[in-house]
Length: 318
Image (cartoon, rainbow, N blue to C red; front, side, top):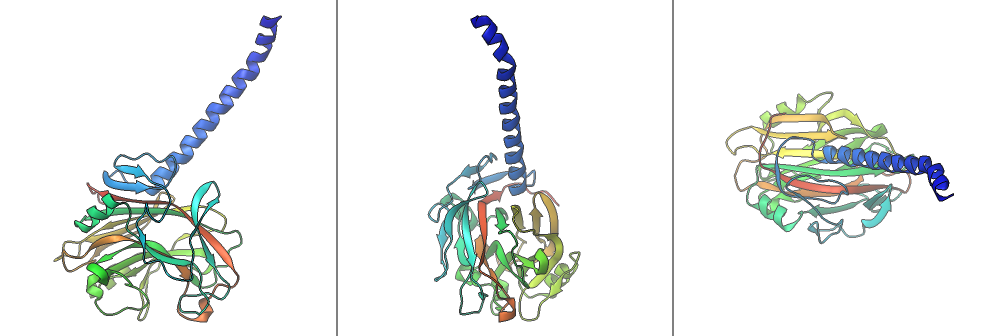
């Protein structure tokens, strides 16, 4: 009787085992895909960190998504970045209040800087030439894009001059750089740069397809429309920064979206002195533009997860 019952149960046991292995396989593929999107090159890394689950890269350690673990500082007042669960991820939530934009009285989004772990920050201050940053972002369903807004990216320069390298800043531009991502109307994506004001930098940026624009008094729109955001979907962005030798224009900035290299900016001068270094991530998001026509049309949100960074110890041309 027992043997008969056991034999009858065998097919169900095997089916359950197969389903479990199938789910494990799917999870592995999901995590591997995320891993390849955050660290999309075959380069070697050191002093790295990531808040993403299931990512295992040599030279990269797992850390919690918290201000203390990620060296968060200079948090803008009247904004929040609450830790929430969203779409299966631990994420920072950004709330864009209706009517909020960069220069408006109504505040929205958030703004702060991320130094990374102590080991990572020390490697940056020591003058690391190559750095990979990454994060995932999801805009809420039916997000109202209006004219556009800013997303996080790497930054650097000499000391405190590296900060606030944005907002139309013109002074000391040879001592800072800011490399944020931006969305435009209907979710069109681009790299939004503040680089030293040289003709060589202008020429290099204007060559990036499909469209690059020199904005009067503000940053450069580089590679506008090279990718597009859709609301309600996670996108993983990786940004690779290679510093130039101070006397040369051999710096590079590459952007990957979901593992695809969508922007390749080469032959630029990010600095004029070896004292100018990558300092971390300018972790900022808001609507704008500096006029009310850019404002968020409704109160809406976005989420940021999988925050990552690593020092590149061997570089490959891309």
